[in-house]
Image 1 (cartoon, rainbow, N blue to C red):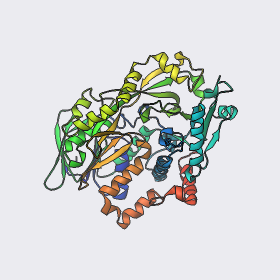
Image 2 (cartoon, rainbow, N blue to C red):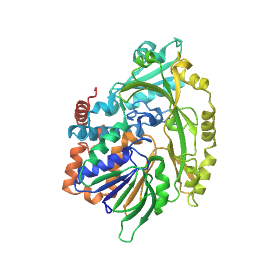
Image 3 (tube, rainbow, N blue to C red):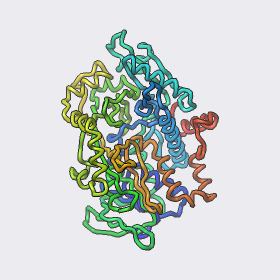
Image 4 (tube, rainbow, N blue to C red):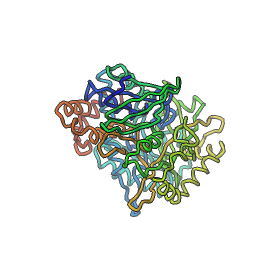
Length: 493
């Protein structure tokens, strides 16, 4: 163990793997220590069974395009997320081209992305969304239809036994993807741990973080296998522990981390066990979330590739939990409450009673009730063809507003100290899909001086050819990059 590494990464998910790989490419002599509480990498939020696996590119996720009171659709967030996913594709293509990770088909595949709605108001919404999105380069290829026959050619299971008079609409993007973030993460860690100056430790839990007078961070770890305690002094610390990031941020005692709270949400899938049905569905179909549902609960009938096998999932069904991680403690929520975040958490809770009720109702659902919601997307669904599987845990951010009250915030946020010596990532979706952009933002913030050097500038533009360019504003650059990354990653379109 290097007791004085340049960088310590806490957590072995997609964020830590991405940051570590970026930094090692930018500065080959950098020393990195990686610490994970569990006994293997990427077994929580980044694991394939614990997330949607959708390459979140805003092609199908209706919660990224909210409808305004005047009936128009705000597509700004969708464009931003689509840009970020294109950045991720560029970095992953670089990793493949440089033989830093293995076969791209092990972690990414082409699976079309569709949105599907019914009812006159929803059909109008989807048409408006399509019209506004297709004015942008990133969405030019999107198709829209209200034809039962055409929609059935895209997703036959969804259209079975529907009344010909029912008003329905769908959008279709062929070049959508399914991403196994667990395999991708493990691939990056395999590269990292083979490099000089990088070590990875499993079954190691952070017990204390303390800023020393010399500016370094002293971290005290406990080896959960042997009971041995160790100390590491690092120039920079990244806390990328998913739902475990908030408690570690609180242990750091940095001013910028005060006042944050977390609202944990659990998830479950219905997994199809009928091979004939699995073979008949080849796309990802996203609908509109129920009123009061969190964004992670947007329903989708979802073709997945997990461990080399085609799977079909529906959900996720949200639920209330006090755990911050699947392998966490039921006391996680209680332990996270401090004097600095008590009021924001209480006020956020008071303003989100309908959400809490929705989550509790979800927990109380019977199997047959879950099948009934599935039938909205697959009318011929039969109870015996589906089993319930546990999905991942997510911790939504509770943040102080200008009046000191708590606001439940969806998405992700980097929290860093004023001197940029430590940073933590809080939040959830679209997280993994936009990990590269998020970690580049962190590097710009915490390694800004180094990033401006000629060597780092040259390298980052080699890894991300569009760095500094808005792809949506430059059709020629976008088409070139899209075609290049598709070829390298063995994707269609």
